[in-house]
Image (cartoon, rainbow, N blue to C red; front, side):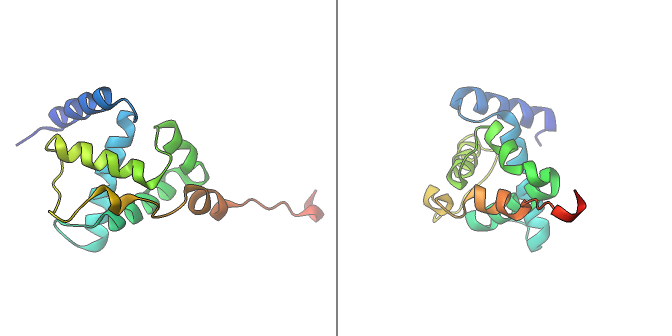
Length: 129
């Protein structure tokens, strides 16, 4: 059984070795995985699209209108970036994948600006100024 400290240390090594994404992105993906499993009431085996939907809802829930900026701060600019994080974690033994799972499952699933910025469009009522 791995302790949370061992998992964290392994993620730190992955983040340092890969260099594209901050450790916070890896920790968030693990949280989003758990969030998605609970939401879908599954014990394992979720698709890339399922996970990305969980990432989207958890991100908005935690970071609201700053979600895209937070993700970009972590080095994550597209849904495919989350796929690379997942596959780095699979390679390190922190996650498992089904034989049919590929990085292609994460490509262009949604646009960050459309999903995170446009949904929080702020409007100013001129009459209240």
